[in-house]
Image 1 (cartoon, one colour):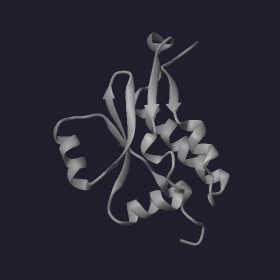
Image 2: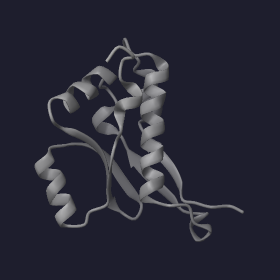
Image 3: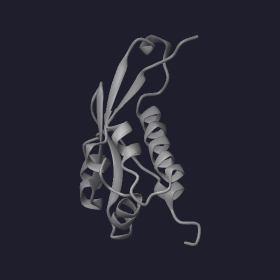
Image 4: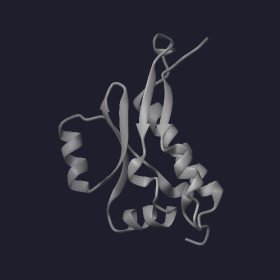
Length: 121
């Protein structure tokens, strides 16, 4: 039984190729978290087996995992924000912006970057 939608992560390969000092497993963990969040926003459905959704990660494609974690330590969040039925973007968000999204019932998932934290934290 086929279910969809399928996800196309724009800049996914660039994100993985731009390792810098990051461990490959940490970058893969962040990418897996993006896919997990996308599946929460678009639950599997037989009716959507032939549908594609574009996930844009422009904002993080050149960032290190340390840069992403530093933003969260400063109080910001990384979120996957649903812009329409076929597109979502990874965005850096303040808590104020998060509250606005909740108030307007905009679809989003907060990315859990604990998978990328150093083991000694």
